[in-house]
Image 1 (cartoon, rainbow, N blue to C red):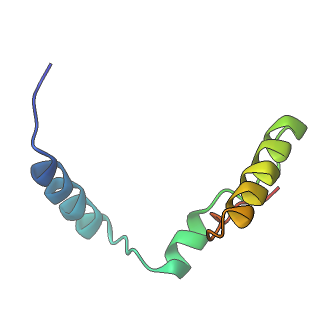
Image 2: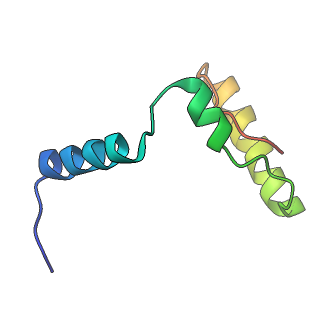
Length: 66
């Protein structure tokens, strides 16, 4: 197993994104997001409950399509 510092890993990730032309904008993230067309009913229910729990706790839920 290879030990790696988190800062080194994050630097490598940032460099790879730069090389690939990826950006961390909300529009780019949304374009890559799984729209959930093939999700099972169980997964849809799990996402629905997670969103409900986040809202009940006063937190912004993660965008998910179910």
